[in-house]
Amino acid sequence: MDYKQYIAEKLHIDGVSAGEIAETIALPPNSEMGDFALPCFKFAKVLRKSPVMIAEELKNSFKTDEVIGEVSAVNGYLNFKINKVDFVQATLNLILKEKANYGSSNEGNGKTVCIDYSSINIAKPFHIGHLSTTVLGGALYRILSFLGYKTVGINHLGDYGTQFGKLISAYKRWGVKEEIEKGGIRALNELYVRFHQEAEEHPDYEDEARAYFKKIEQGDEECQALFKWFKELTLKDVQKIYDMLDIRFDSYAGESFFSDKMQPIVEELKEKGLLQESRGAQVVDLEPYGMTPCMILKSDGSSLYATRDMAAATYRKKEYDFYKCLYVVAYQQNLHFKQFFKVLELMGKDWAKDLVHVAYGMVSLEEGTMSTRKGNVVFLEDVINKCIEKAYAIIDEKNPDLENKADVAKKVGVGAVIFGALYNSKIKDIVFSYDKVLTFDGETSVYVQYTCARANSVLIKGGAPETFEVPELTDSEIELTKALANFPQTVKDAAEKYEPSYIARFAVDVAQKFNKFYIDCKILSVENEKTKNFRLALTNATCQTLQNAFGLLGIGIPEKM
Ligand code: ARG
Image (cartoon, rainbow, N blue to C red; front, top):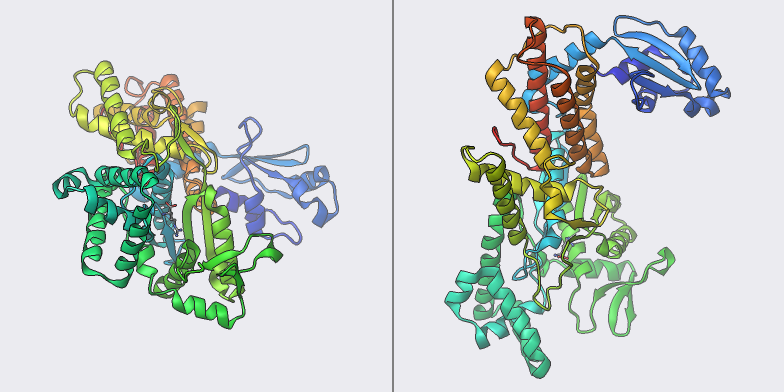
């Protein structure tokens, strides 16, 4: 039952549609005032009346019924009290009927959304800086699929540039095949770091590296084979992390994939008179839009990051005919995205408006940040493993007899890393703290997982009924049900704002309300059978909803903890 819509259709405001009214209806901060409220100042302008008067008039013409039991006008707000028994019955029925689909919809109607995320760089560490793009992108992928969009996950590999020439130069000079094979990205990164150290003394190495890169581009067999090998080693290494984080891609078409697809773009820019020469380079002037020029070709004719991105966007439009194309990339690249979006718009691509930069803030570790060049990077894999280890130690101390401790520790540890990155609004910079993300009684994933395990053990003892009758209700039962009822709207909002944090916060809110209910109400030991059955059904619905929410974030929930 969509209460907002229901109320909206019973109200009549000249010049305002029921849909608009429904969108204006809010949840009051405390339910003493009502379960839903319509702030009437929104309509003061259209109706040319004071909000107080509007509220008063609407109240007088509103007919209460079995769904909306009470209506009142207070300070320009129209407050509604719903019939709690019906509300609780309808909400829990829906959850227990839809189960894993509760919260889903088909609003996407099969429209395609491309999501460019994680987009790692070949032979470079997969470090903590990649955490947000990976888990944000993964969550958006699942959320949008849940809402009926067709999603295409793209790992736009950074596999183009002179660094691969450097790597070949370093490998030929110092590399040992077996060691690289065994060491993967770390070994490749060591070579890269060593190249930079030694090139300071031997500037000619840089020339050699450039020559090797050229060879890759020209299709030299040996260089291409090495490049391909570096790529395979990197992807094999990161796959371990993707598996842990439950991350999937539908395409790995990276920068080098577009090396032969840029020419038409450059031609078109020329034809449309958008290219200008600037110190030998070819650029698009963006001064009228308050931006520095977008570099298209360097003076030696080679392409740039933006050129490759323009080719990629054009390709994606043709290949997938996307409704939206999202780029989950750190805000440091704000200018880059603004620039090439603008250039595509100037070229007359009407779909440029459907490109969205989903920007997010920096993640650093408590100890400090990192730099790839010097080699003191924090590998994401190490962070995840450390979190799992710490989780194991905590679980071992709290519940030494638990079965599958290693399994539980993995879900808890990995969950803590994901949740740590998704709990805050994405644009905020975050400092990752192991202790914080693993607190059992904070706003954490462990807290939610633990709550769920607790609920689950009640269900194991008492059964998990799907049918029930609603008894006389207590406040904590109503508050918990209200929280559960917010799930579909929360998912919708998360998709609209590209904010998985809404779902993370939702889960904490539900867990807190469940724990309040758990303390306030006896479940298994309550005398009245009808009440007991109802409370078990409410517990069951809570478990289901939390599972759905965490599923969208990519976090598993252990059955026991
Ligand atoms: N590989 C890039 C980096 O690490 C991110 C690529 C993002 N995607 C894109 N289409 N530009 O900075």
